[in-house]
Length: 352
Image (cartoon, rainbow, N blue to C red; front, side, top):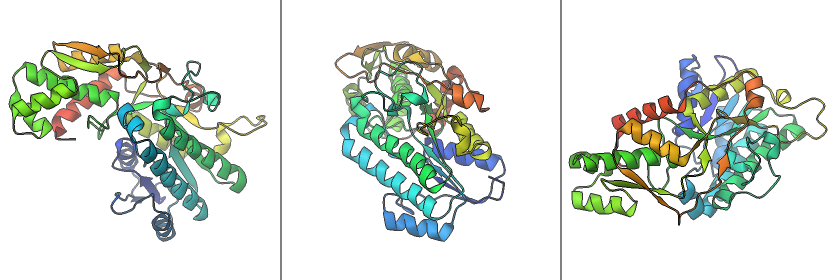
């Protein structure tokens, strides 16, 4: 990939896509194609075919996907498997038909078995059952990995796949129904702090409501009061978190420096599971994470753990040995990252 290459970033408004776009621009890349969902619906085969035939990109970052937290994944199971399969099928196949030089497919570490040994190595894929709550999404992402792998083997393409751990950063989703655990915690704890300080106007502005009585009632339904914040599960599950701009640097590093042939041993009899984990190699319990966020925000209340709600997978720590040996490592530690995300949230607070 050189400075004049024509690069298509699919999903450029999302958490990772926006970070990739920012990283490319900062490095001096100028020939970048972006399309909003209304301009280009990636689930529509003919529309995607016409786009690729017209634009003829050299490189593709496939960061577009339907994503969400445990509530969304478990509620909209059909949407998650259908939309993600359609997006990746269309983009990967058209990349092959239009001779894209290299494609990078972004998956998720939820592809791994629920009870995978820790830390999780790439080779553990498809060795046991998945976590039920996000099984449809995980199956779609596994299909994307295998699609890249299979096209490489049959058609000699150069399609790479990366599996990021839990990501957070600018342009994160703070919608309570759709957000992942970290932005949800930040917003809940922030609103609880505002209530505890009687900053009702700020609460109303955040929620886009006109009545503080209405706001308090709504917040009570999601477990937020001035004195307490409800957290789903026991707080025992451990999670790994990666700053989205670190993820972007990994993606651009791979596109600039690595080829499909670089990610598997030449002695490997069967070429499979050649995706790359992207993470920090460090995890934290949800309980400790909540306390960390609480300290950064300055909330004085307490947490209530709703053990009737699911924990999800108890442990999900990635083994990053492979990508580290290839030359990339993360830079932003979790405490600094949370503080940066909280400051971003304060500057952009609105109804999410």
